[in-house]
Length: 302
Image (cartoon, rainbow, N blue to C red; front, side, top):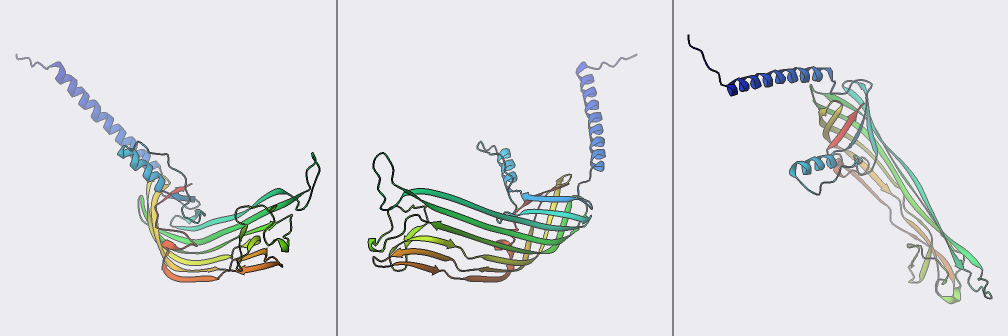
């Protein structure tokens, strides 16, 4: 009787191949089960928030390419008008979408100056007066619309329409403790230069600003959009959209009130800027109401 001799390394290779095959089957079955258990796309009642995907794509692209100066991605607004963008899914294939920005702010500064003409005997100081600067701004953006969705699996297309408005304004006011003396012909040496309040008026005389009000900018837009997104992970997608529609922007005239003297008279002058408006029907890559819409977006659903 012949006895077949099996080398040890052949036995080892056979066992390893069988083990690897078995492990692969187990992992494949587990992956399939997990994938079936997970819901990739959003369902009725879910919420979503969108951010700019570009920093994340740049990060991973540099990481794969071996860029040694790669920096961590940042969580950026989806549009340049810095609105918070989100959705609410009223059904599996329909969502209400909106964006919101409500911004108000102010700044105050004050500076003490020696009172013009005041004297004192050492070590006492001359009387002091106060110059003040105040500024404020408003920036409001609001949009709302409806989105319909169509597709199967991880790739979903969507389309719909939305309406948006924006309002923005800014103002500055100044007060001065020392009055302008007509016979001096110049601004008081005791006036504070806050950076934007000393200029030349239309008569060519040195002047100081009392108030500076930007014209209120008002915009309204109506657009339709179409786009697609791919769910790379459960409830997390990368996508983008394009839009077309109309936009109207109106900007009021800037008003600058200032005081100056020609050496004989102290006067207050109000300089008015120009008004402007624009209207267009086009793609919305330059629409200041909605902001650029062609950028890639990363959306989280929960």
